[in-house]
Length: 316
Image (cartoon, rainbow, N blue to C red; front, side, top):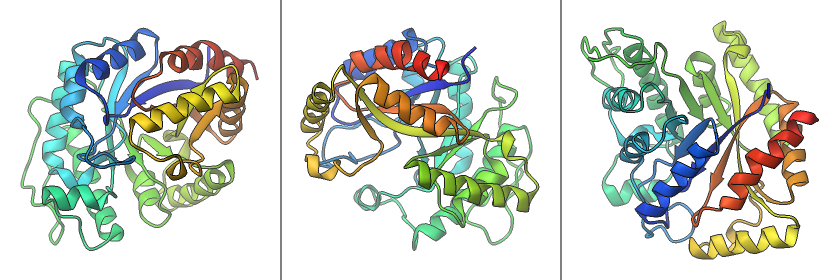
């Protein structure tokens, strides 16, 4: 059995709903373990004023047209919603999907969408991460059937809050995205079932060391946390063919190539190139790979990643 797990995130920008839904159905049909989308209110690549779909209503809709893939946001913006509401929303999606929900959460970073929608952005990233830490503690308790009352002086004001009904899953997994060394990774060590990171092998190796330090400080076994890594593969027989697909996708998303050329999460090239990068990260302990896919969604990459590249990685 493969020790590599694959999931797909479909960009929620620059698409219409029929294509977005068809993409989700195809991911599920091909046997991917998980299906994700963003939690953004403005487009984050290129022109921010492109069409974009809201995250949680997307997951609820996808739950009714898929049957196997786990469903989550990569990652939910903690600033957007009260964490009690998030726990209730994820519980609803868990019931709609017959137990396939994952709670993905992060501190939020895109100030422009907050300003446009009148959502409080906080005094800085540090404050938002403090909010997230408090939020995740409350959501973990709620999803586990506890009555939650907020500590004095915090951001939230829960009083004996209990979820009714409880999720179908006995333990809804919480995925935390981000690699901030002082606060985010401390919250990962305390509460996360899954951690999502991105970047070079050297950067990831360092972040793992920091996370291990936080786990030791809070008395947590790092092996209890599934390491997931994000990437943006485009797979063709030659690098040139893959690049042409990439350039067309970025044009569709109104994104100049000079804005993405230095983004090392785009893995654009042959199956062998993508497999090599996966094998390098698996050696660090990353066994789940979550691929972001821009519209128009690329069926060839979807088919080849799970059908061709994953066997290469398994055989290595």
